[in-house]
Length: 332
Image (tube, rainbow, N blue to C red; front, side, top):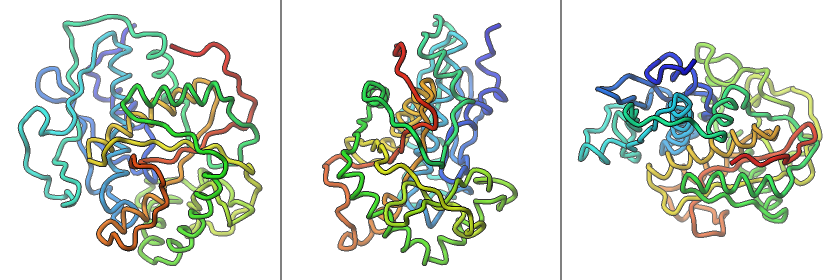
């Protein structure tokens, strides 16, 4: 039975399965006029310390938007996306809760369901949709690496959304993780960061955010930590485990650094993550360096030159597996 493309409860469930910064789920799916579905930001779930410019909030919304697109495609209908209000309305007043730097109003995207244009979903679209509930962020050590043929497939997935995916060489990875260790120390000493982390982890903020059982262990070495310590405040005494010596990191890059690029990066991120899930590859995120960069944008003299390439970095994704993975037949 083909699902109803206008079933808001189903679309909301699919959108809510997308990853978001500290599991804040900063979006709302609504029925719009006619054949439109609206994706709106929830500014009250903005992390003021971690995400001062709303970059990660909009990346999160982009990931939810990709899920919406796949949920509509499996019904056999096309989904035409209008990013941001000004692309089809000629501009809109800013939401009262919107940060002045973001420039986004009360709508991230409008998705038009082309009910008069129907054709079956491709095998790729069907598999990506089926992977939505299977995808989870894994903050545990990976025992196995990802074959190069799959890493190339992940790069291709990001390019399909207009975003480049750069696989870091182990020397660049080591350099980035060293910087990440320094950033972690700076953040750990910031009482505002600790309070925000406390509110959105371990059952705080009304049970929303990242639950304690998803924190994962602390890395045995604090010099090159490949994961964020989400239990820094609520569960600081978790056991330590040895993580992979050379984590495989993929960095998503965009041509420019506007709000629309952040939403596009979120869609590319989700296509990459779901493609990885189809092959049994697991993922997690490292965003602390980007967050520190955002906090320093108003003072360029403090901005560290951590990213040597001209394209802005939007997301750092760690990939690996706790079980052997195989490329098998690549999906197309």
